[in-house]
Length: 106
Image 1 (cartoon, rainbow, N blue to C red):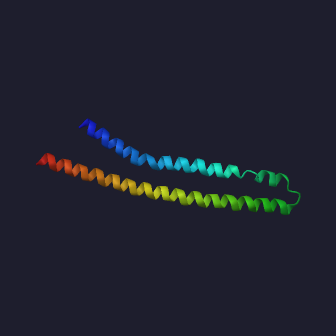
Image 2 (cartoon, one colour):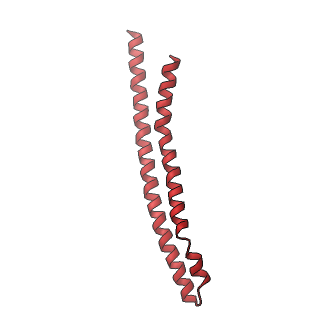
Image 3 (cartoon, rainbow, N blue to C red):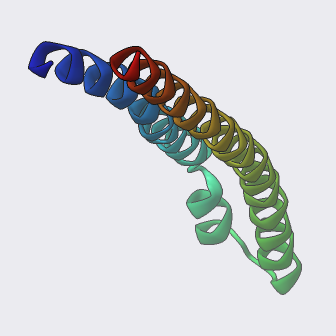
């Protein structure tokens, strides 16, 4: 009984820990992409006119807006997959419990 519980809990943990791992990976990849484009500081420092500063701000906003949109899309997918997997895990647990209960009742 204890081994069966440990096995089932291990399976459940693996299924539920994947979204956390995926989010951590997404966070690191997004941060890496955002810092790779760090030449924005040079654009600001080298600005000679107000138009140059405005252009640098627009470039930064455009690039970061794109990164935020990509991040949001990926994070939403991870969350939706996690919800689906949690539903499957719950269904599996209920079905296994019903089976076990019926077998013991017989």
